[in-house]
Length: 194
Image (cartoon, rainbow, N blue to C red; front, side, top):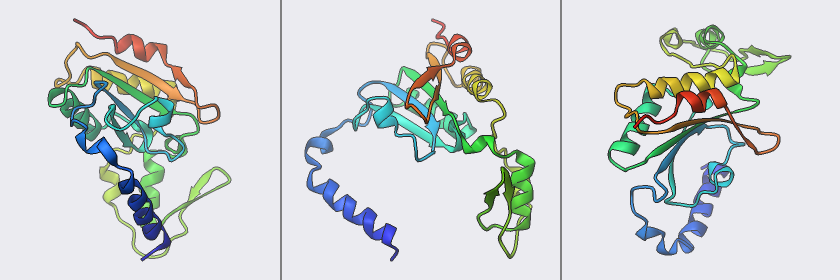
């Protein structure tokens, strides 16, 4: 077993020892909202949004993008678990800004090993077999950070399974300060319509 494996299990033992009344938390989030944000390890939605266990749904993926699966989760969050407001939060210095679909496709075609970023360019250093399957995935890369937030809010707002009564807010998290910066255009297009 790896050191990380051991560390995770040890941390879990400590968590279990103080679990207390968390077993009584209800399935629906008590504050009735959801956050869609990036998987970046520098973002801790519990801290930047003041959450504790049971407060909100947090959906994470690369870039915090409104992919089909993210929208699926948001719809379940509303329809079955009663969330009433949604936040879409992208962030500065996002890795999704460092490549395009074609770069990812080329890297995967060469090998399935981890690539490296050298002098602002992604380089495949792996050996072995690659795959053409990367050409069939929408990678949802980011060219313009504010615009990507607006696009995602619009994508969610116009989805046929999303009620117009849900307000959808758009923000950018600044990884240098921890501040949530409102994307006004996103909040305008995300307004609830009664």
